[in-house]
Image (cartoon, rainbow, N blue to C red; front, side, top):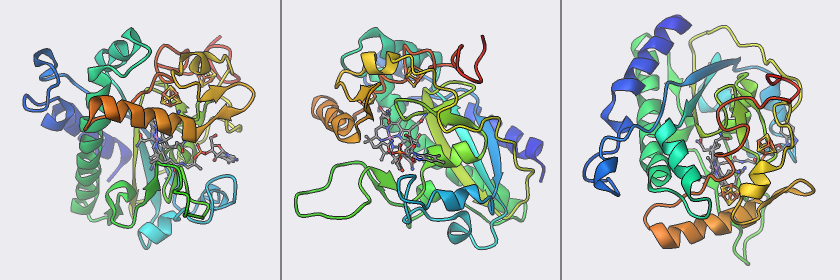
Length: 282
Ligand code: B12
Ligand code: SF4
Ligand code: SF4
């Protein structure tokens, strides 16, 4: 299987699958029935043995709980990362009120995440049908993430973390660099979601067109000014506990959905690499 065949199959599936549109029974408003969630994805590839993955096990980067590609899938040859940009409708709506998430964004966060799982399953099946074993950590029972602060009686390093960070994996696959808000900035911007696959198929790794972890960020501070929770600052970076507490407040208001993402819209890195960054358009 070559990259072109794989990417064409993935793009066709994402474009046509019913999961990429809000279904009537889920729609928060009648006019949102049929709203598309994701545009065409970007793809990035890294060798499963790339020493960069070993660096992710270092304290302060992710930590020893990060699970290497070959431990998810014995004989792994390639890691494939996909950035799924949100549609204009989702992004525009979330810019209209900078205090609370738009209905469109809530759908993109919740129904979008359900569809991410479907895409992972489809991608792994597609590779397996071509004779190559595949895994998708996001839907693997061994995957864990911590999105809440520790309870008073809990100890341990693994808070606000996971054993497979999609942004760090996307960075390894050449898709983009981190921003002050800690989101990953790609050439289609930051407003979207990330998924990944690990396979025994050998695909040519992409060259990372950057050397710095924050190379695409201009430190313009717009994400900090947008944040309704004041979780981001140019001096101290981004506070996960403050962001997480605000996400819980959105859950109280919009249960069972939640979300925010004001640091990903109305920012110079919303739709692309910002002008003026070390690698951006001038
Ligand atoms: C835990 C989690 C959270 C936590 C903590 C966020 C975080 N940054 O870790 C909370 C609940 C706060 C959160 C909030 C949100 N999240 Co969240 N979250 C996750 C989750 C499940 C795991 C993240 C993880 O593993 N973190 C690990 C720690 C170590 O990451 P970190 O602290 O940012 O890493 C820093 C260090 O590594 C440091 N560093 C130091 N030395 C070095 C050296 C090197 C070489 C490198 C590379 C880095 C490095 O740089 C990094 C950036 O500062 C991922 C899904 C996944 N499996 O990846 C989604 C994910 C990160 N979330 C996502 C999103 C969209 C959100 C929200 C916008 C929610 C929403 N949809 O409304 C908000 C805001 C995001 C933000 N501004 O950070 C997306 C990000 C998409 C993107 N374009 O970047 C992800 C990838 C989900 C997905 N599948 O798409 N999230
Ligand atoms: S809004 Fe500005 S400071 Fe924030 S991540 Fe984007 S480029 Fe960086
Ligand atoms: S998701 Fe919302 S609360 Fe969290 S950092 Fe971004 S703007 Fe702030």
